[in-house]
Length: 157
Image 1 (cartoon, one colour):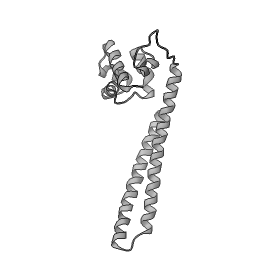
Image 2 (cartoon, helix red, strand yellow):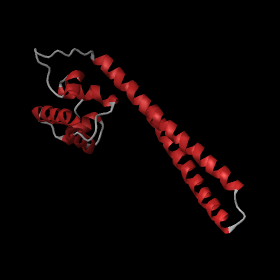
Image 3 (tube, helix red, strand yellow):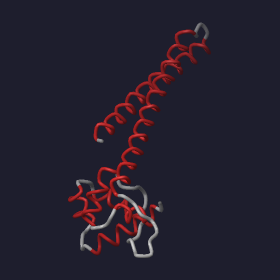
Image 4 (tube, one colour):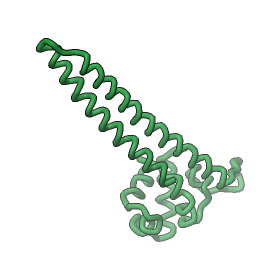
């Protein structure tokens, strides 16, 4: 998948429909900045908007992912439902990975917290202990935030 090629294809199809980025964004329930990111190849549409996007532009999911219109010479044969299901599963795995990173940060934070309680007694040890306490609090808060965001994304699916 070439994101830049897909972006150029999206731009071409949108313009063929005489739509602005703002109009397409409104119909899909996303921002026009999101449309711009898709069209410049900076990111890909979320699987949840791919089907409505393809319907708005009157293209197939396969054409979207190929970044070109299907011709008689095309050898690729796709089933749109299977592609969408694959994209959905891939996104869920990415969301699960994000949640795991958050949990890992919380575990590291708890580890630093336990080390903090076990050292001290001299100026250097007290300093290191304080740094570990700060790191542990930061990592646990970051972990909680990341887990919450990951779970929120999973609920949307």
